[in-house]
Image 1 (tube, rainbow, N blue to C red):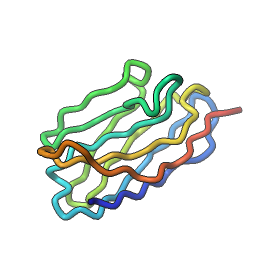
Image 2 (image 1 turned 90 degrees about the horizontal axis):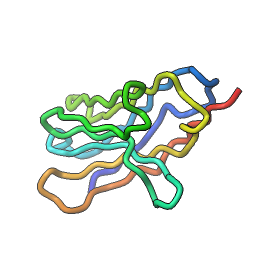
Image 3 (image 1 turned 135 degrees about the vertical axis):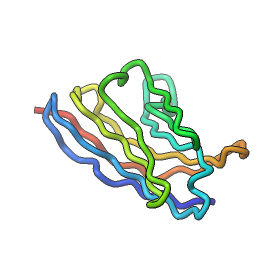
Length: 117
């Protein structure tokens, strides 16, 4: 399974920005569906954003227009650009990667994002 390491979390004021990165060890990273998740009330984790191997993206309604997911297959890295951050975005953000033909994937250990004044 691919090893994933997230970085870029931290403390930011409301309205600020952060960019999360997730580096993968998989040599076929380009075939992976990549995503970011965070915990949510009543759920173990909710999908924040995802990107397919062809570049199609999907976002949670709560982050549309504020967050952007992107990937750099040459660097085996997926990014989450987070703008106009709100206190309710505070969470541990987890990276997820799944081969496009697999039924399960790998998780990173998470990176903490705290939005507070």
